[in-house]
Image (tube, rainbow, N blue to C red):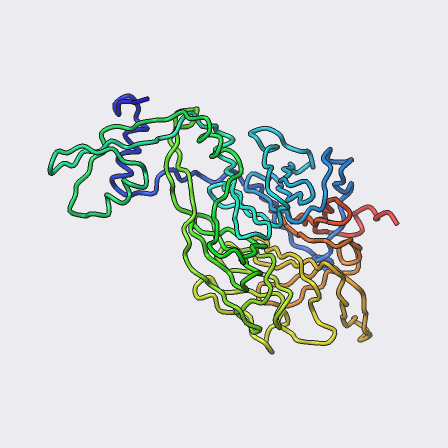
Length: 431
């Protein structure tokens, strides 16, 4: 079907923006829940367990081996439900969400880790050489039709051409031509629309030996993602580029996206700034890259956004200490809060050794680490998260209200912890 430009202001805007090579379709960020800043006392790093735990009975969904958790800008909590080959979406009350196709993020074999970018693309990796994606906004707004072709006129020769989005992009690279869009050809093909609304392959690496186990979106507004490749011991940067435009039900034009390989940003090695069997990863608001690994000398690393060199230095920053017993055992996942504090969950407990005020040594087993932005160890106290026993936890996330979510993987549930203002004011945990 064909529409004349003067029938819609949106179409005219689209044409002007394509001709001007502007970045059309950027959405404003969704509201973020901000917690009130509080001045804490001596127990400012104690995280008390919130009850009830999010078990299958509590949330109404039978989780099977949850392996990752991310919190979206709208507050929804996405859980990689590996045993059920799907992503489960919860609200802050632990209720499963089904509107806007949030209950249809399915068909991914054994999802391992997930990430969300500022365009509401959900990226999923599962240990294969593929990255999958699903767009939350397109499912919320719903697609009316697809812009299949662009009718353009060469203003110098007066010739008329009909291009796909990719063909138009290539034609515009010829700076000797002056092209003007005169019409848009739309398609309501249901198969194509469904492919844009459902989970699809976003990136397929040419190397069948690639094994993507971690994925992280760049900082807000940046159009790229990172993936850890345990099969080839590297970290890749993949750009998120426009693949076309769709017409939404409410009449707005919105872009669609595909991948474009950028480069390898981290290569194999045993020292700082290299990788050996990398796993999970995340980024902070400045774009710095954090990842865990099970090989090499440094199992948790922070790399600079500008040059991908190690931010921390051996012999200066405690997070880089090489000691016996080791600081890290099997780090499963890493998260960073709004103030750049670092949280790491271990799949197996590590021996936490600390000096008490009376100069005696206290040795306990813990699953969770916390570090300051400059790599110093933060004491988590002797209650709550510091003494909780997990069963092979594989994911940790923290939201804007300082609530920590941990995937208690072999228990098939999500455990939550809240930063305590005063332990005395909180109910005691059940024994």
